[in-house]
Length: 144
Image 1 (spheres, one colour):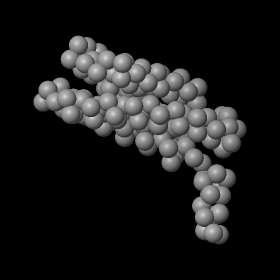
Image 2 (cartoon, one colour):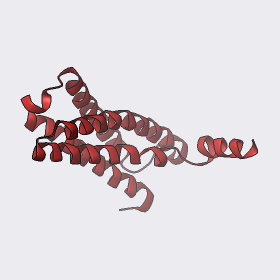
Image 3 (cartoon, one colour):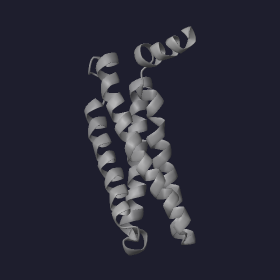
Image 4 (cartoon, one colour):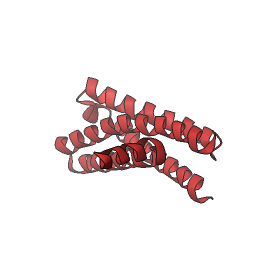
């Protein structure tokens, strides 16, 4: 029981939560972009469904990473982390794009065939925004 208490204490009090959560949206948007590009290349509905699952999970992961980032900025950097304002705006845009893409696809399962270009672009843009956010996070930790 002591070990479990130490883990809970480390997760909630000692170690910042954001670094543990931030990798999910990066990986999920990257996987989604890869799957949607493969789906377009192979004209595969199964790969498109995998992309849809990834972008949906990226939406929820982006919310968790964004909220934990704001919390960690306040608790670790007294609200003064470098590029914090830019990261908040980009995170909000990422949440809008991933959420909007997932919602549009959920409402219209044939979106891949009817609006292929915009649909694919949303995946690629999501991944690019996640990469910029990752770079800006690295700037906070390691400098420019």
